[in-house]
Length: 192
Ligand code: FES
Image 1 (tube, rainbow, N blue to C red):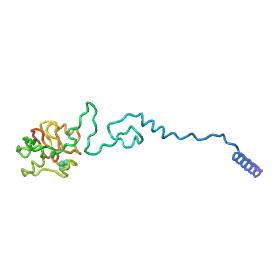
Image 2 (image 1 turned 30 degrees about the horizontal axis):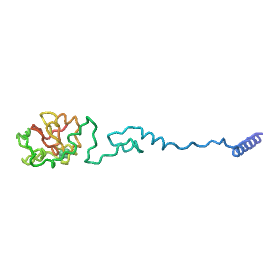
Image 3 (image 1 turned 135 degrees about the horizontal axis):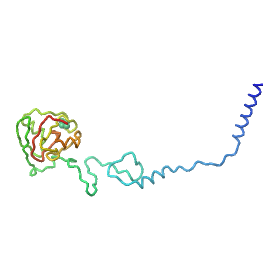
Image 4 (image 1 turned 90 degrees about the horizontal axis):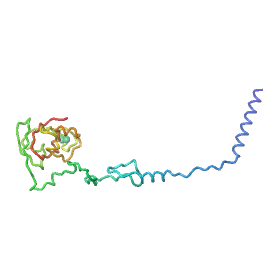
């Protein structure tokens, strides 16, 4: 008896599958792929930005092109270019070289440093054994602390990959890439 029920159910299922296989479709067709159109429309309506966005807007307008190294982007009204950006001491003409009295507190001396000479180089010329490692603004080994206020008011870096704005506000600078723009006192070998 159980076998007959099983055979009957199997046959019925087979018939249903065969019937479905030959049944006429509903005529439904997949809609056209409009994703490209949507992306282009979005890119055209999203406003331009001033910074490179390499991945989030891959089509059309919207994403600004990357700015090649060494070239400043166009600045909008009221925007200021970072003072350190692109500073090159070689751009200082001979007749524009100025000297500032820098007091090295730990060394107990005040020396004259030109605005196209780093604090580290000037100290080494005095024979002082000052700390450093990369000499390219990429570590923090040469860091010193200007005692008179925010570092931006006394030096400019030709490169700074290590110090945050807050650190510089507290007077820290990278002596290997720091060029004086005023007189100040510095404690070498101090880091944030
Ligand atoms: S020695 Fe590395 S940042 Fe100055």
